[in-house]
Image 1 (tube, rainbow, N blue to C red):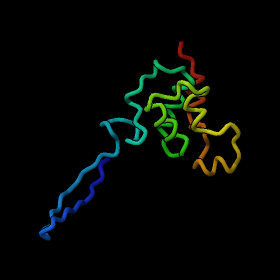
Image 2: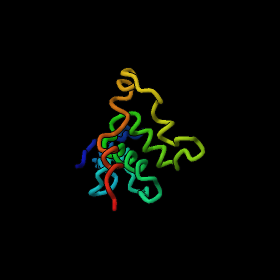
Image 3: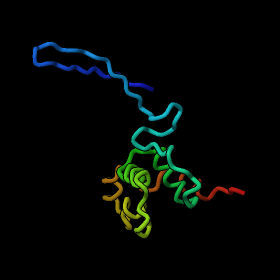
Length: 121
């Protein structure tokens, strides 16, 4: 899906140039991820299964503060020197109704737990 915007540049002499600017919603054709949460550059094999499932499903949902925080943290190299890593940085330890409301939804992305529990044999 593509969106189109109109950009106008005006020069000091009073002449305006109008250009049509086209921007893509997804960073790669056929990618299931929005450009803000595109984890195509990450490798699932670099993660424990449960962690990868959480990152993947956060990227697919990409609608809460914690989703975006987690994805951006992992894309930035992760928080390797912090216990719990990016998951620890991007969600509170205790989930109150206020926390969930401020986050924009539940901290655990739908599908992450089922993904982590799938039999991979």
